[in-house]
Length: 291
Image 1: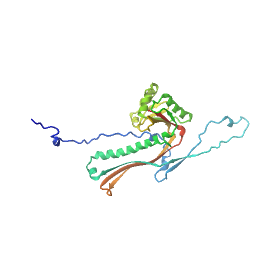
Image 2: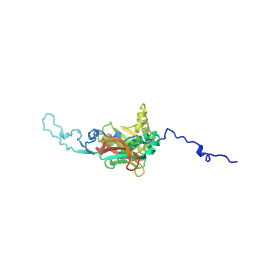
Image 3: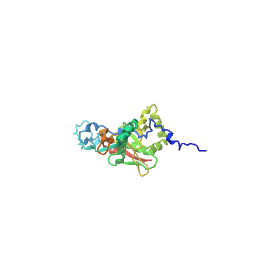
Image 4: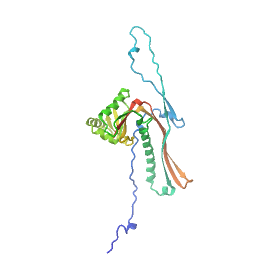
């Protein structure tokens, strides 16, 4: 005796479209906020493409040969600094664009358009992060490398990165360690570092987790970032100070859209950002090879 089945009854089995959606999450911007933004207000829209940053020779201790013999009124030896400048060029643009036939834009769920626009902004911010991490001239990849590719980051390597900052008189405030998820797992295996991370986050608000912050090791604020540049087999992490790289976003993320009738009835939406970054203090950072 024949029975009706799900296959034979498919036409009469209704499907319900949820008003909700499952979202493929992009990570929050992590690297860009850690950089030096002091010159950003000087390069607004309509102000050209370059900021000339005057370098200042940091004062150091007075050498013994430049000390006066007490009570002799000896003549002074004057310091003649040779000051240079660094040029921060706004010469990059990231964008994300989509086209939708007008009839589909009328029929799709309202939540789709909201998610699409939100995703455009997230994608551009993520691209800006990756550009700083991977640029071989002015980004993380331009700094002297320490550590070993695809090998666990060791306590000795972290100390080497911090010692470099100490040797170059980098301020205590503004130091950071940006690492991949695998390198984070590496340092969590070191008990003394794991204890420091636990102690540094006691009483902290959970909101800090949103921008990748997960604790402090030595003098370094630690951030986890899945968008760092790959090495030969591992990942290129970074220990540095905010003054190492200057950044400027001339046009922050902007969303534009409209109806295209030349190619058909097509709704188009795009987002873009215009920005630049420059290595200012090469001694204030170390690329850290790891997993």
